[in-house]
Amino acid sequence: MLALRLARGSHPLVLLRRLLVAAASAGVGFLLLCTLGHALGHPSPAAPSLLRLLWCLVPLAATVQFAVAVARTDPSTRPRTGLSAVGLGPARMAATAAASTALSCTLGSMLALLFFLHLRGDLTGLPFDGAATELLAADRPLPLPAVLILLSVVPLTAATASALTLRPRTGTKPGAHGTPPPHPTSPGAPPSPLPSAPPTGLPWGVALTAVGLAVETYASRGGGTGGALPLPGHPDIAPAGVLAGWSLTALGLALAGPGLVHLCGLLLQAVRPGAVRLLAGRALQGEAHRIGRPLGVVCATASGLIAAASLYVPGTGPGPDPASSFGPLTGLGAVLVLACTTATLLTVALETKQARAETTRALLRQGAACKTLRAAAATRALALLALFAPLTWAVATLAATPLAA
Image (cartoon, rainbow, N blue to C red; front, side, top):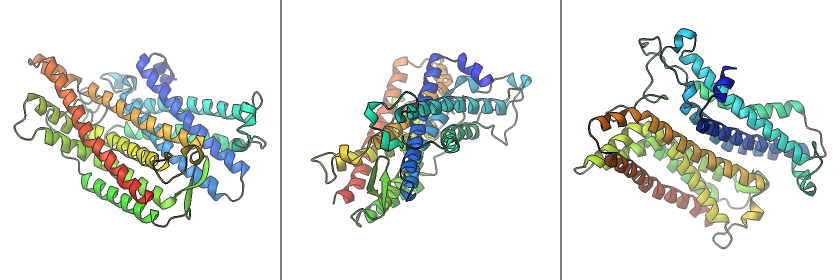
């Protein structure tokens, strides 16, 4: 009830972010229900349906990441001074954030169910001249327990991840009003005026990325469709080893992201920096832990899409026409992953700006010019673009080259 009251009184921008979470949840829920429809229409063998279900884990992970980022930036669920006296301490506020996330995702799951039933003709008759009859197994009854289990996956996973992310930190001394001070990477925590400790995941991330590219190269030498892992909407389209290699590459880029951002900030301050480069570099070093991982995930997603486009666009690669290779469910999954990862990055950027507001006000009180602060922000954005854009293109090229041979 508290989560519902907070949702009703939220800022329109906060409500928009929650509606986006609901839309992403609806997309994942629809993919899961379509997998159920495929299993009903093709009961034997069960392996293709199981593999399609595994494919849904990628958009599921992107949606959960986005939902957690939205929960972190929600101002109504942040611990406030004095709320512990009325029973709304950090643990209770984390539970409220998890409930708000579950509410948004449940709304999306219900919309997915309504759309799925509409396409099957269970509500108002078969639309689109029954084009989705075979895909959604419209001639077979839906098992209610399976539907409920699949639709509860996104709300439960997102709520659990939000609660774990926003849980109170242990081992900290309580503040003056009984609430622990915010963790340096928790919502509402002002960034330290000094750069944080360098992230330690860069070597591991580089190693995982290299291993992933090597696995893709090795798997692509097998040729044919042996060991293929079907994409949703089209069977036998990609070797399972290639997809496993891409997963390792994506994990490596996400792990290396904070280290790359920290390194970018360090390079900005090299060779006698001025005020703009010094401010930009120090800010990147201080925010590396917060924005590095979403940047790495976006880099991995973009490189995967670039590699797929270079292989399956007619006339530019050895692959077939995308219209015949990738079904509508594959397109929906790709759009979900790209939209959720990009929205997560934008949400984290907004969170970082809010966390840096106190430092910005302090700089303005000390006489810093607004033009200097804007120039520092532009320098940060250009530096990150100059680092991650070539990296994305290089990873995409390395991933596509052995497949095109």
